[in-house]
Image (tube, rainbow, N blue to C red; front, side, top):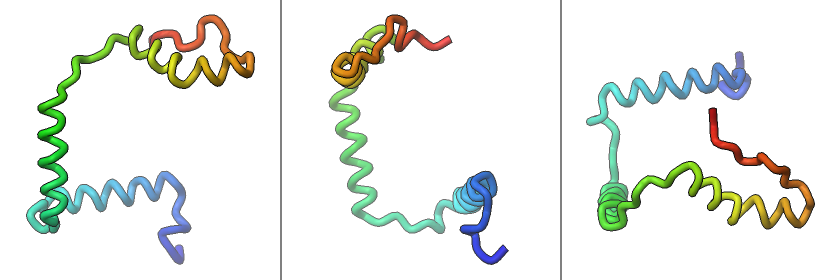
Length: 88
């Protein structure tokens, strides 16, 4: 093998996993910049201020259908009855 780019997709994923595990074993050696810490704090604060209750599958399905599926599918005649059924 001449390059990591010659690896198969499965081998590339394994390499990434191995590298991640290696870094995670000693997190204190990974440099985290102040702007990254600031962004994390901002996101955490935003999440705490705007906590959302979980949506039901029915509500989520309707939202997806209303926003994405129906406008496209109805204009193209593609939406079939039974589309977007709840997962098994």
